[in-house]
Image (cartoon, rainbow, N blue to C red; front, side):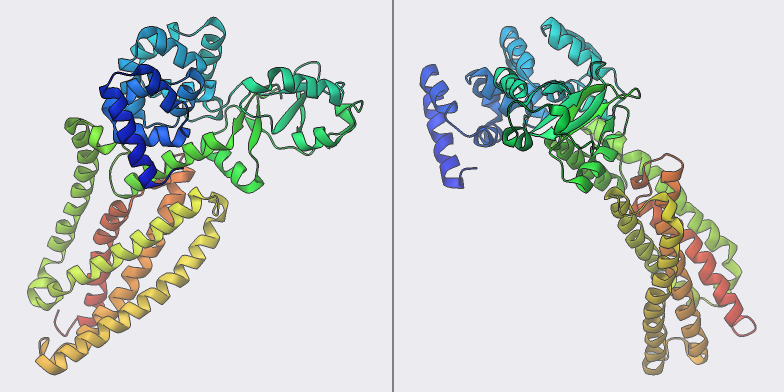
Length: 462
């Protein structure tokens, strides 16, 4: 990728040629740039997006188009002439074309699919037929497959003949006469083998496959754990249907990460850039969770009402309510965020819930004890200096200290177990967002606080 100065120079040069309407020079300029630089140019000059893509060679245009933001892609397809749109869509790799089309309304997809040539239309409709979020939506049919009886020379000839059209030739896929997957072999092993050697004599039958119906997040974990650039995709009968490459999986992982961050923040996932989303839709995405959290927080008032008599007898208890519930909410949010991230990275499975619970009980006790000691010390010190809490400052200090231990412990347990519980139910763990956990712990934290206060201060202040 070019430096900032080089990109500035490219932008100025393009704008000058565009003002002169010098199409040949514009085409010459764009076709000699790095694809990443062209994408940067479109990002800086979105009003010229369709002009930039339309003046590039179709192969380079497709390479640039597939790495653009969805908003820019939509603009380009909307503004390009129909013949250029058809040319671009047919040139796109099947998996990238499918990823783009699945973000569009059904009517638009129908019209765009009509522009595809018969072969590409059949492939696209096949990929779009798989469930959303499945590996089938990611896979591409552009790969090299050979028979176990082929020789190395046969494979090399096939690569020379078809390799330019393939997504990758780093790995060659071996099938039998029925189309069933047998093994994959790296191109390095093919090149180093004798030309007359059979493919069946080279393979070692140590392979990893993805099922076409697997979740895309599972594919991400498989790639991460096995250091592969591409993996074969098979159906339930072990028929080789396509391959998934690492670049597609990384793209999905980035989208999933963005969605999880938004959900952890207490909002529905945004399906387009923030500044491009209509305000009405943005409102709908945010208001639902805010209403749910607000209704949850109203339970806090219910709990306070239940302990109204205790608060009336010892008004000092109300002073520590924000301290208690915020500490519990913070510890719960911490635990929830850590567990969601660990589950997303494949570090934790549902079956390991007991190990997680044991660790969080210990962590909760340790964290709660630290905060409890600080709270206990602060109340005693403040009372000794300012006599804020009267003659029962020690009892109040014990109430605050023990309550903090209990609330923080409950917060860590709730925050760690809720994502695992939701995953067990088939829901998205990120739904147990930090605000949701905090609201839950706020309500239950009050119950813990006033229960401890009743036990310690009963007969003294209560």
